[in-house]
Length: 125
Image: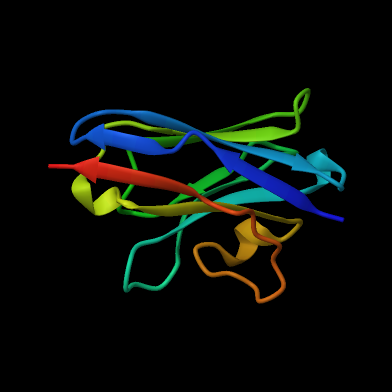
């Protein structure tokens, strides 16, 4: 069973940084792609970034390119999202998901993804 636990969210001023972590279990980590998605109040969930663990290839939403960096740690089965130069519009609940073909459909998503509980990121102006 795929299990995902997000952590690292919080309140930060605009221009600040946060590092999110997604701890995973229940599947062969190196065979999967892991993605970060976010949902702001009143808006649909959107893809932020994804990484194919096996080769380290990454994809980013245009809105976060140059500011966010995704990375994976196969020893810990975790994926991190380093978020720099945060903006108020980055405020959202951030979720991670895992699937072997996740990056192929990014920034879209497939209906059967397993989601973690999410972690709140709030950026004040």
